[in-house]
Structures are given as structure tokens and as C-alpha cells.
Length: 74
Image (cartoon, rainbow, N blue to C red):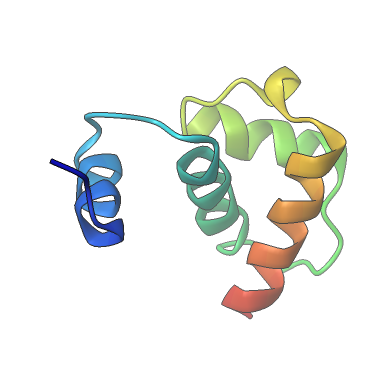
């Protein structure tokens, strides 16, 4: 049986699995709480730790996806 997109989203939201997109979304939602438009390294790291995400695991591609996600949330 294959999973539909909403199945995977429900699994991620429930914490049963973490995909790269899930990690990026969690950090993006945490950063969106900030009133600043400029995100500094310390704030990024704080948001990662608040979401139980290792900030060192982010690649340049992940950071670009994070920026795109933040732009969508505005």
C-alpha cells in the first residue's frame, strides 16, 4: 500500500517520522514567530533547538528551502 501526501503529513505531525521537509517546516514555523525579518545565526540555532532539530544538519539546499517556506508563511 502506498501512502498519499496527507498520510505522510499526518505521520509527520504526529511525530511518527521525520522527513527533511518536516524538519524544515518545524523550524520555519518557529522562526515565523519572530518579529524580525532578518534572521541571525543565533536565532536560527535557537529555533532549531526549540524544535529538537540539529542546526548542523542543514545543508545549503535546506536553508534555501527554509527561506522559501518562510516566504510562504508571511
